[in-house]
Image 1 (tube, one colour):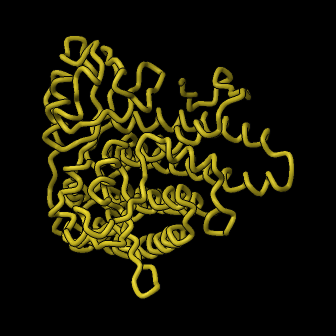
Image 2 (tube, rainbow, N blue to C red; image 1 turned 90 degrees about the vertical axis):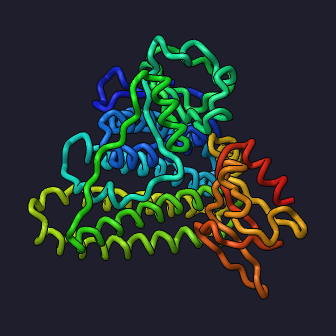
Image 3 (cartoon, rainbow, N blue to C red; image 1 turned 135 degrees about the horizontal axis):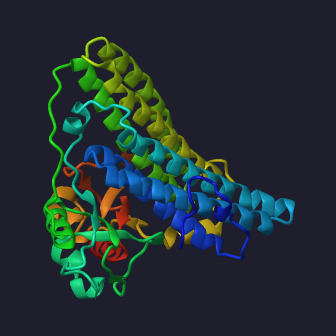
Amino acid sequence: MTPGGRGGDADDRVEYEPVSVKELLGEMKDIAELLIDLSYSSVLFDSRALAEEVLELESEMDVLQLKARMSLVMAGRSPEEAEQLAPIFGIVGAAEKISDAAGDIAKVVLEDIGLPTALRSSLPDPVEALARAELAADSAYADRTLADINLETETGVRVLAIRRSDEWVLNPDRETVLRADDVLLCRGPDDGIAGVYETATGEPFERPAVSESDIADLDRAVETVVLMKNVSELAVDLAYGSVLFDDPELAREVSELEVEVDALKSRFEAWALRAAAEVEDPVTIRGLLHIAASTEVISDAALEISEGVLRGLGSHPVVQAAVEASDEVLVSVPVAAGSDLADTTIREQELRTTTGMLVIAIRRESAGETDWLLTPDPGTTLRAGDTLIAKGTRTGAERLRNLAG
């Protein structure tokens, strides 16, 4: 898979060819979610290398969305088909918007737009870190398969994607051979990432130094941007979930989250304007403004993904199949009475550690009404009859089902 260039040269011309819309949509979903992680991580780590990878993937997304649109145009031959395909066009456009927004976030780092160091000190330490590692020729990983290295089992670190020159391997499997000069995009626990990075590159993994802010309004502005980021990421996850499960209630939750991000952005603007009067160099706030604007675009795109379900058009089987077959799976898991999960907390079960799955939402039926618990905390008690919406690996999903069944 070869990405097109960002400059739009004649050599980057994309021509129609028969391709699977399901595969294209699956790749676009994987890239969109990876781009969100990469772009914010490039800011967190002040990493130009990660930011450059964002622009490379953004270029790949440009090619995929053009191919997807061509295939969809060729598929529509009647009013009925047009009605079925319209939401798919929306999903394609939404993935492209997420890609463009991620690129804008990365440019905050690449173009030195200005960013208060308080942003990095206010970001919570992630449960999992993301790193870019260029494989050295003398690395212990070189010329070995992922199965042979047994990376995820030994370290908890997962290779999300590999860039090999100008080609991408988005879903590396156990048989994928790692080669010298491969660029590995990895996610895992902080300690695991540090060890894998050093083994892959021969260099230590270092976080940038951060400093605390003594300006209250700036702290509030930064905290609001972080909250916008978290809500927008959740909205994207739930949007794809609403499509996969053809769930209008889940789609309505996405709509509510989009409204919340809009309100948070208004609050952020107020704090940022107040902080500009106090900081020594107001230009350092420009980056925050760019990130907030891009984050709002991501939440808007999430709503576009779920719009077909929200408006009663349903979810096209091709889209459901694409989401189901994508790299990071979304699952809906009911908690059975008497199961290992019933009447225990997420913390007691250590679900993230034991299954590798992140519970992003819980649907709970009570007195004939449906309640949603979004981003449940570790102390949340799981009840029989709850339905868990979780994301992670296929192996992890099976472990979660076994615990809940």
